[in-house]
Amino acid sequence: MTDFAPVFPGWNVWTVYQVKDLNDTNPLFWGLDRDRRLRIWVEDAIRLGAPSTRVADPADLKGGQIEILPSKPAELKTNARKEDVGGSSAMLVDGPAELRVVRFFNRGEQGQLTWPHDDNYLLNEVLTPSPSSPATSSAPPKTIGGTVGGGVAEVAKDAGVGTLVAGAAALALGIGLIYVAVKAARG
Image (tube, rainbow, N blue to C red; front, side, top):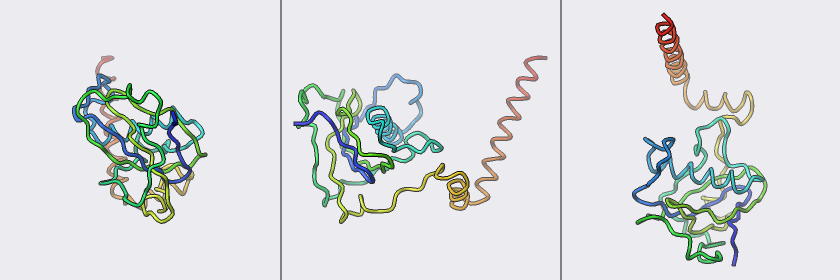
């Protein structure tokens, strides 16, 4: 029996139960789709529960480094399951749920966290990484903040100059509108 979920260096794959009718009262989640909320939950669980690990990219959107897979890789074996956790009968989600598969890359040290769960999410199982599985042996994901010049340059190259110019123009327009609104309010 174990009460902890391991987080391995490199790629990790988890199966997670996600409630079909998410019941969050947190206004920060309003308007976010189910996939984004799952990614954020996984990132937060790891960040808060296993501080020696490093899954998030500080320059990316929250949950941006968590991937959702279409199915569980058949070649990966189970390392730990919710049924192995002491008191697992108390770990329940609030309503019908679907099983989702996520993967993430840990750039930090191996860690462990208390088995993550709440009303909307329950970690079902942690799969053991394998060098023979494409899900856990591929190159790490790119990061926006990888290096001062390199990370941003890679994103610029991947996104295309037009996308960057459009984003900069939208930001400038937004700042201009805020300035005009503040100026008008002051009279």
